Figure (cartoon, rainbow, N blue to C red):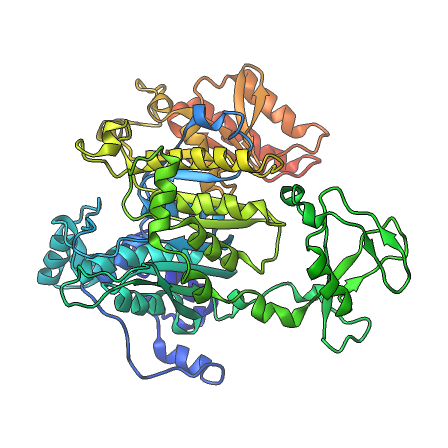
Length: 619
């Protein structure tokens, strides 16, 4: 199927508004207007963002990635990492987002990104790996030859114009939007160079009604006298948008089913909330004391980790009738948490950000790297930590994911780990960083770091060690799994073109070219299981298959008749085992083996277990 700039949008329209398409597949806007006229006020204002390459950006967002996911096996098997659910990806973030969408669409609670500001001195230039001819673009985008050449010139010569920056950001934001959960939010750091354009772009991608706020971060303590126009620029912007029209960041999307008012409290609905201190706070002596119910005289022992509040705060809760007293002296008093407080609980950005300066980020990073300055202008951990806490609270569900696909020095990972020290739910992170090379004359290169993602990974390791040392009782996740996105080489592509599945055998073993682990990792993400899903070995006579969820993966050559028979018998036995999808690495299977599987597995549909098996041959 030919990919066009708006392919995904057209698919969505066909799904829900099939009657608005003509026999030739054209979308009839008048039918749509007529269908929706009583439901939606369709504006005729005609206002929109426009820039050179806008349709090209939509096209790029629609094209699937050709990269594969290569796991860092040695790193991932280390004790501190093997059970970790944090993810660090080295590679182009556009490719990463396309991979991640297949497993994480609608699952990310908070995204923070610090993209290039396009200042003229921050190194931003637009380059992409897509290679179209002017004729191809004319056809795909329905534009004339002159405009096609201008777009291709923009993509190939390393432009840093406003149009180039918007063309770079647009597909990434489109994909990021699809990753956000229904109550998810995205925060984007930016300065004056592209702030206005970014606001218009986000209105276009997320919708104006999804705009939450443009926060101001006062990043500089002292005036900056170096500016050309004499104005001291001491702030950055932080744009915030939701996944849909909501006020989620202020708490309205929390699980309100937990709130009720059984005692007719005039303050409204409330829920019972824990007052036992976290393990990380157990060393604070002011949190350790017995608690007495002034009405009954019952004394409750101090929990091993202490209370969550000191005596003064606890006294205020008691006097305000906010403590729930159990009748059993061995029980644990809890507190009333009022729904009305959600509105104010998750606000206060400016009051926090005014006290966190950018110099703090540089100091934090140099301290971690023994006084060495390897990265320009890292964000402060406290600043990102406040964003993370604001972005994930309130939240529902058991899985809380924070993403940063312009990871840089990995401040976001550091902030998430620190936020988890005091969090009731453990937050997981997914970070993406392009393997941007350091110049040979740089201090980082001389210290042995070749790319920025290497600095990011090392920063996480050092920050984790510091957190572990300062919080010995903290049992949270301080490791991470590492993956690299790898382009398929021209040499491999040439071999793929020569492959004929009808011939028995294939001179070049393509599994060795890719690597079995890379094939399996790429497949399980493609099939929606995510990077943390476990892959189990399934022994079929002398052949090893691999199972993840409802998929059975056959990757290796040499699947014998005995192995096929064993597979059929395993499906037919009385156990509950029976994945519905059998996936073959086509290059490893000759015509005979493929034909045998196709003939035998579908017969199981007629057995007692009535398993419908789908055979998927992938090349």
